[in-house]
Image (cartoon, rainbow, N blue to C red):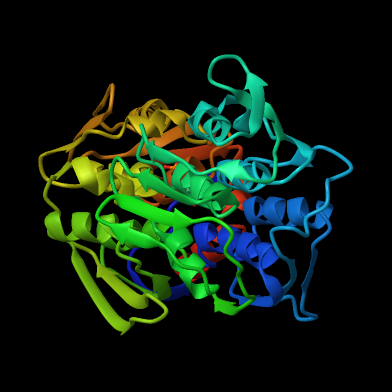
Length: 430
Ligand code: S3P
């Protein structure tokens, strides 16, 4: 695909698709509850479809309304899942794989999980170790327990008292799902606070847990009840337009109905720290959503590290692009988790932006990015990583000299199938 900037200034109003993390969990909690769950605003992208298909294969009736907008899940409870007749295809989705493993750990049958080439390189030892401690059998390839996985669960898991060695909402969530099927009370201690959609949704479905700082206490054997849910827009998808609005000349971009759960808003803190013009309006405390407006800004470099990292982990590729346009050197540290995402995002981000003329040094746990770079055309590849593909597409809007050629743009369907329609809308609103 060839990308060339046609932009010279505009105002655009966009509504990004539903939050990916919330959408996965809505399907899972719906399947594990008693009664019907309806979900409005669900993200209909490949990752979430992998979750839906996996539960259908385990006997859960899940269907879309005629207009395709509302998903209905006929819950079967923790005791109602059936063994799948074939291995389950997780596609590219680490979230599906890890969260479903926690669910399968408490089921008295064996399931095989496999995925694409990228998923087959994602470490699963981080879930295998604690789930084995709870009594499940989890097998994968090699020391890092790479997919394909075989999970042989059992009823009556042992409760766990576990300190997470990595800051990961996926691992935490897998353990919450397993703890809900264990005898007694589990304690999970986070390394850093990560997105808390699983905790929020458990309470929404009538369950309970106790959160004290980084400690989560959770009782096994809870019964959950189906709910009517509405999913807000994904701040991770919105972040591409936030950055576009800040770095392109004479721009104003308004993003409606964006999820602003405080465990996800690290990018907003970074934008403020860099001096970006950002307005938050129409805040809805119950839905945890708001309208975000950004305008072209003079930006300055910043340091991004520590507890901030899990609050913007998926936004770091596009934040790296933002930093190439700021005054000074931006440092990203404590982000070694980026190396085990859909690609090694430290290497791939640094490489891609360097090919476009930016000055970036990859470090073990992050990057050092020099600002005020003039980007030029180059031949680039998403390497099968949706967020790299979208970052490159936004970077191409800055290019005045040459053309950007992006191979593997189809990876973007993983989380944002209508991305190029929205990009077109942005270009036409000029
Ligand atoms: C997610 C958690 C994060 C994030 C991923 C979605 C989730 O992964 O990168 O895109 O929905 O729980 P980790 O838990 O591996 O950090």
